[in-house]
Length: 210
Image (cartoon, rainbow, N blue to C red):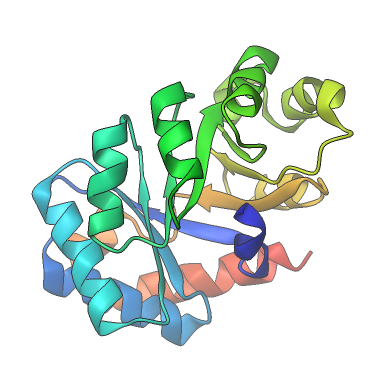
């Protein structure tokens, strides 16, 4: 299911305590102009749900997703908001089973072989490698996926991945995309630095081509 994200390679991540809907719409517009029409919004508050819903309604071609899904209930709420993809930090069997029966691109989180096995046993093969850098980065990921190399799953990586480290992840054939928090920062959004977001998105696109 994560294969649909391969066309983008980089997923801008946005996490704000109070996300204004108009700002979220402007972020989506700016990313589209830069050539990177997708965004993952950390899904914690009503304002996050509202932002996802408005982007989905007003910019239907935009790939809007929800991040940090912690439960089945959160998954259902982000589906109700019309998120096109959802990512979780951990491997909750109930959430994985629900996602497998829903029309949404979903990946549970894994950072060791046991997590991957949990995901496989509950009906999915794709996963999110999280937290990427603090658990050993690319080399650790290569180690934990080795026992499962006969499976055709896709991986999204997230957590501390800087511009310098981005290309290393994308060189792994299993990696569909990498989530980064430096394209759409809370500071850029709060100060309405749409130009900075545009420039960072273009940098991400350039790095993804290396």
